[in-house]
Image (cartoon, rainbow, N blue to C red; front, side):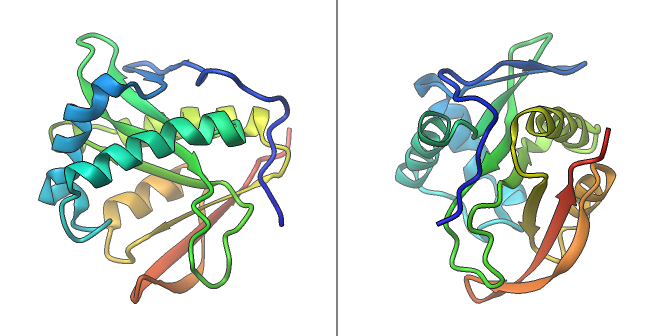
Length: 186
C-alpha cells in the first residue's frame, strides 16, 4: 500500500498565515460554522450535490483532525485575519476513494470557501499557501485534485496553482475531472 509521506511527523496542525487569512487546525468550536458552510446549496452544488447533515459535518471535522494525527497532513480551517470569521477549508487528504485511475497514496488537494467570501481570490491564496507547505513537507512531488467538470471556478483556482488536467474519471456515478500538479523544481 502506498502512502503519502511527509518529511517529518507533525503533532498539532501547523498554522499558516497568508495576506488575508490564518490557516489553522480545526477545533470542535468550528462545528456550527462548518455546518452552515456544508449546508449551503451554493457550496455543495458541485461537491456533494446536497447539503451535509449535522452528523456528516461532525464526521468531516473529525476526519480533518484525524488526518493530521495519523498521516501528518490534512485540512486547515481558514479564518479571516482581521475579524476571525470562519471562511472555509483547504488542505490535503487521502480518502481512499473508489475511483479509477486510483488516487491512493497521492495527496488530494481540496478547498471550499464560504459564499460571502467567494470571488475575492481567497481560494487561490490559501491553496497557494497549502501547496507551498506541501512542497516543503511531502516526500513525493505529485499532488492531485478532483472536481466536477462543470465547476469552472475551482478549475480556474487549480490551474492558477499549477494543476493540469489528467483526464476524466467516474466517481460516485458522476463524471469527475482529475487534475494533478508536480512540485516545481528549485
